[in-house]
Length: 122
Image (tube, rainbow, N blue to C red; front, side, top):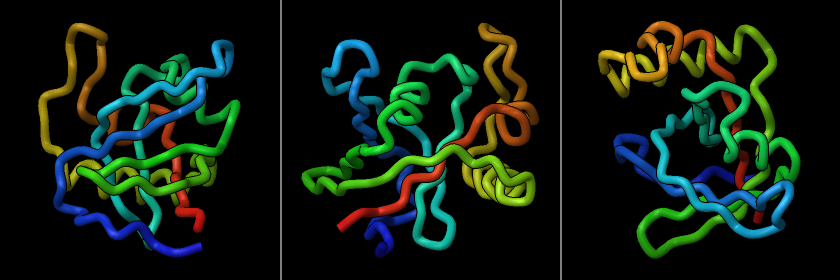
């Protein structure tokens, strides 16, 4: 597998998952980090977020950046050390105040919510 040719300073990417019930494509614009050539994402709405559940159901995803599209394979970040790494990258890239409307603090977003790796597939 190779790295994604994406500028890590870019603010957002689009990720397309296949609906676990509908079978239809679902596209979400999302903040991201890059670690060792893989994309990392945080599910601020927790494990129930549709895009997150779809990616766990069908690991084959697409990453869209401007007019470029890449195939990827999604996998939940389960190793505690890797999860801390993801949180550190996201904390440095996206300092914000959290989202009180859903009870999400910045620290919880960085450290506690589910995280996902996307590895590029050629």
